[in-house]
Image (cartoon, rainbow, N blue to C red; front, side):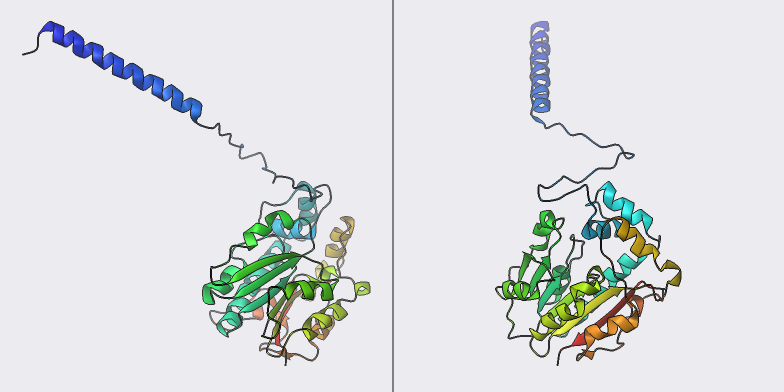
Length: 303
């Protein structure tokens, strides 16, 4: 049995241990970094990269907003909010078409992709879809919009067997773009050329048909053209409204009818179901939900 002295010593020891623990807790709190949390009502703006002018809207950031992304600024949201509400649905349908098309191409054995007008990364990105099927696939992204540059690193997360590269390049200079892409892709083998929601930002005086023709002629037989283009064919009530919203933001926009989109595929072999609306193109079930679409889409083989 312990006497009173032993009891006092035990109590004293306990107090010393408790004191040390309190001091350790204080030190730990001092070492921990301060964390601040934004209130839900306060929008969190992305960091401004030196190469990005956040005072002017950019198509890539407007598209990011349409997809529900966070890499955009108030000037971009103003453009997006001026568009018909269903424009956001069309952006989602465009991404869904991309996923179906590149999945099908990868399963057919296409393992090289040149995606021009890649935009701000949105998962799943093209290389993630393709390399999940063909791990050794090579993908080259290209975009001239400075807003994309700060996010390009997200496009470079390739599988060890394959590769994923980004070029700051302009589709309006196709020969330069092709020359730089040839450092990463083998143009002696089939390549899938992806031009998604891009060509409607090229007005007629910038020769979009000539640009596409130059790109396609550089690809070997067995390559593919994957294309989507904005239109109001199924939304006649939108005519003039979308162009006006972009014109107000000083962004050129030229929506085209089916008759005007069809020549982009001249001399190529359109894959069934042909040149159709975004929700009508698929190769494997289940079929997309039939909806009105603001996009003509198609996939064609280069003979």
